[in-house]
Image 1 (tube, rainbow, N blue to C red):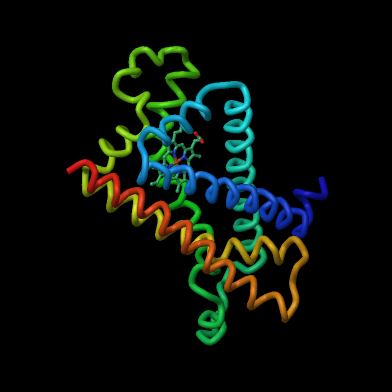
Image 2: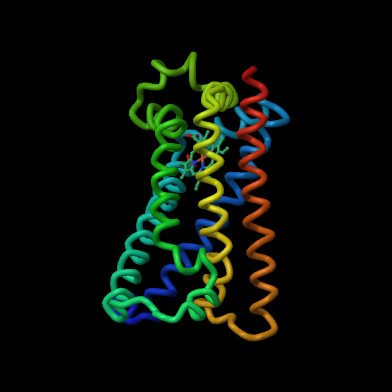
Length: 222
Ligand code: HEM
């Protein structure tokens, strides 16, 4: 199949799924920032995005996007390694390519590990029990998403792990954002520096938004 067999096809899938995941991150960050200001408003949003059919289809599409992104990243990395088994030997060449661009796969693995930790803290306690029909067990404790944020980030070690996870996401996004546009065909001398600047701005806003939720959760838990 063209999308899998050709290098352009594989990059296109990475780019489309990458755009989609960036949009999710912007939405998810904005939604969580609400918890800083009003626990009640945050819980209303969580309830709206609970286990109704639209939310479940949305979660399934999101999971599909993540899985495709990971599978294609693995195929791309393995084929690149096969095509160039010995890394560039010239120091100069390595320095010209940014650190995040050279380490996208490793950064992706760290992002994935962080995501597994995060889903076990939140999704597994909120949407999963609802899907399984055992929400009653959790209702008192975890139907309150804002309280779950405070309970989770009451632990400074967990706060630190989340901040480290956001740093990995920042690096992954600073490369991923402009690379997604480049793979989609927007690649010229005028737009390249602009895209890089936008990539830094968007990644930093996402980082600051999520980090603020962690810090606010910790402070509110005291
Ligand atoms: C301070 C940071 C964050 C907080 C407080 C937070 C909070 C939450 C909550 C409460 C849920 C469960 C929603 C529900 O079940 O109704 C959730 C789910 C989820 N989160 Fe996060 N999140 C944060 C950061 C992130 C980041 C950085 C990512 C991605 C890299 C992410 C990806 C997901 C995914 C994929 C789900 C499952 C799908 C969904 O329920 O929307 N989250 N998060």
